[in-house]
Figure 1 (cartoon, rainbow, N blue to C red):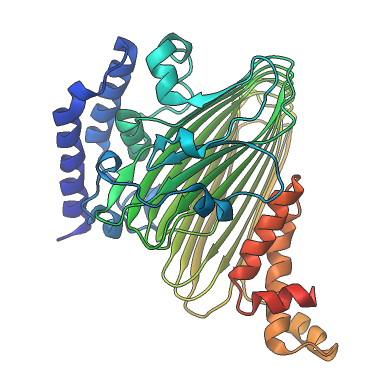
Figure 2 (cartoon, rainbow, N blue to C red; figure 1 turned 90 degrees about the vertical axis):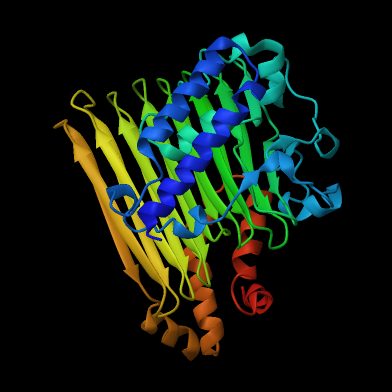
Amino acid sequence: MTIVAVALDAKQTYVAEFASSEEERRGPAWLRQLRKSAIAHFEALGFPTQRQEDWKYTNLAPLLRVPFKPAILARPDGVVAEKLEPFTFGVLKTTLLVFVNGRYAPRLSYLRRLPEGVRVASLAEVVNQEAVTLEPHLGRIARSEDDPFLSLNTAFFGDGAYVEVPNNTVVEEPIHLLFVSTSKELPIVAHPRNLIRIGARSQATIIETYAGMGRDITFTNAVTEVSVGPAAILDHYKMLRESETAYHMGTMDIHQDRDSAVSCHSMSFGGAIARNTVRTLFRGEGGSLVLNGLFMTAGTQQADNYTRIDHATPACTSVELYRGILDGKSRGVFNGNIYVRKDAQKTVARQTNKNLLLSREAFVDSTPGLEILADDVKCNHASTIGQLDENAIFYLRSRGIDEEAARHILTYAFAADVVNQVKVAPIRIKLNQLILSRLPKGSGLGEAL
């Protein structure tokens, strides 16, 4: 069966599932209409194929051939607090919301005391209790007209996290949203949806972790919508630690108001096929954005990174740095786009993608892009793909370090350029541990450093 036929068959399955279960998805009229519009968009678009520019390096056939069932049919056996510890950050004190197979798990969550007016809750609970709060925001930041996976999420999402920080509020401790996928009996799909609102002159740190248990075959299709108010500050971290038999499609859309500052860090370590899409829009002057990414693949994994930074207003700054480390027969994709509109004068935008290949069979496609319609700007981009520097290896060996350890030290240093930009020390420590664990003799490297 061709990939086009596979994609068509999978599309029809999801459309039929929506039709058969539509009555079960209760909610206000505006939400039901949002879902209907989304499934109509999905039906018109279908699943992407390699004939489409944004997907030409990604063969989705392995994902589309799996007969995934709704996550609600799975039994989340064995998910206890002790098994979540590897996905937390040691001594770091956080408000923790845990979702198992896309559904809020209050018995595993821990809500610490938060400043007055700050709300951290299950999105499903907010829909049930006061959906009017969501109407101006849900589905208004992440638009699904031309994105089939976003359309699927909008049509099917059942739960996720709702985070609201009112004006003039500083949330000192991070908020951690932990999504765990597990199903030993059948392959399942979950569509978690998150809505994050940071008020004017406020500040918060939010962590999203997506984790898998064992070698369960799961598919997580996640969407996060973020609104950052005037002069607000948001530090966001996404940790992708799905199992190597899992599939992940993650989309995050961010709207920044004037003078806001956002730093967004995407760290990808798991998944058979994992795609992270980050799209940002400057809605007011004077905004700043730091967009960092690190992906490490091995075996036959594939990690895709798609970014779009929309400079729609003047005097905004964006700095983007993505690095990939690929081993085995794995593949990586970086597709980065910076769009500077006609009236966005005084824009400063820098984009860098560097990739390190640790084996002859690893492969990466890098497509940095700039589209500039304004004339008073400072913009540049750069991309490199290569192997370890043999001169640097020789230098380390001349200092008494064996060749294997020298290669590991240089690989670690390549990743550290991204990791060292992480502001929260326990997160940085966890990232270092994950990087070392994915290198042979990681503990020995740790001693050498």
